[in-house]
Image 1 (cartoon, rainbow, N blue to C red):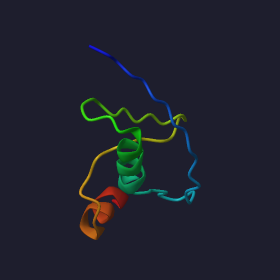
Image 2 (cartoon, helix red, strand yellow; image 1 turned 135 degrees about the vertical axis):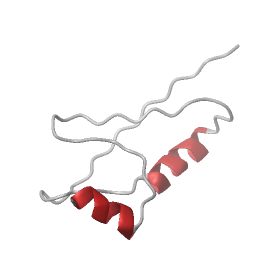
Image 3 (tube, rainbow, N blue to C red; image 1 turned 45 degrees about the vertical axis):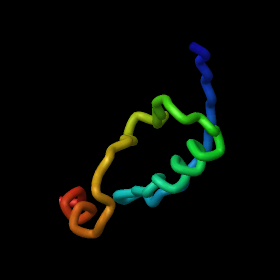
Image 4 (cartoon, helix red, strand yellow; image 1 turned 180 degrees about the vertical axis):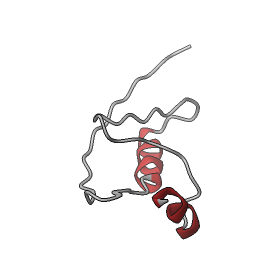
Length: 67
């Protein structure tokens, strides 16, 4: 079995108050460009006040997070 590891970094500027971003398209592009057919994608955020989460990215869910 051959294993491959790929690393990619990028930065986002978010608003200070409830900054958020949908990074789905960027992740899909990275997977597509890697040509890896089977595997796992790991997403990491560096910072003490940030978080990575999975949600249905729509107005109602974002409103719930603001509360």
